[in-house]
Image 1 (cartoon, rainbow, N blue to C red):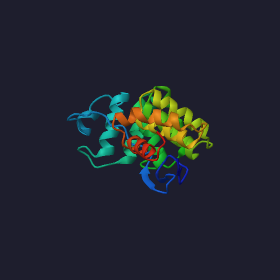
Image 2: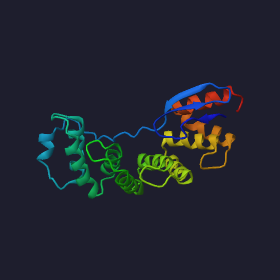
Image 3: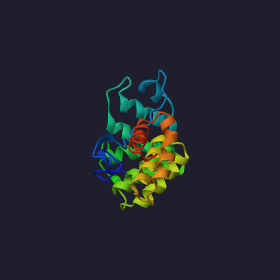
Amino acid sequence: VGQFSDNKLNGQGTFTWADGRKQEGQWVDDEFDEASLGDSSADTVERESAEDADIQYKLGIIHLRGNGVPVDKAKAGQLFISSAEQGHVDAQFNLGVMYHKGDGLSLNHSEGVKWHKKAAAQGSPDAHYALASSYFNGRGVAESDAEAVKWLRSASELGHLEAQGHLALSYALGRGVTKDVGKALRLWREPAVQCDTHSQWNLAQAYYNGLG
């Protein structure tokens, strides 16, 4: 089948197929969940209750994006903390991302994992997927391929297409699970049909190499 050269599912990497051809790609890219704000601005939203978790989250997005105000990621981080502590699942996920990136908040992978676990407990597919990346890479937790696959599987069950594709890749490589190319092909098909480009590419390459 080939190998993923940096043995990680996070960041840029090169997957080398059995015939020597290489595939470049970015396998995991944590992104912020963004609120639907309509025409809201910081001035209008700040007139609402400062204790409302959803408003704190929306204010965080406003300052993160610079929607009518200068971009202020540090303020966004504090607003996400306020919202996340009140149980807002999207704020919890974004807070985890900010801690992992050290963007607006001090880099702290352990805190990133803590908030992603809180978001995952509330059913966030993105948080489940982010935790898989953390365990694959030993980022804030002890590196564990088996634990990473557990989170990939749960994210997949919640409908996360990229997680489904990476779960298939784990089976193709035998990383965290017993190698099973047939199962990898089956797992790649659903996200490929739903236009996940990494799954489409991997599935096409597998067929090209006579693995289907």
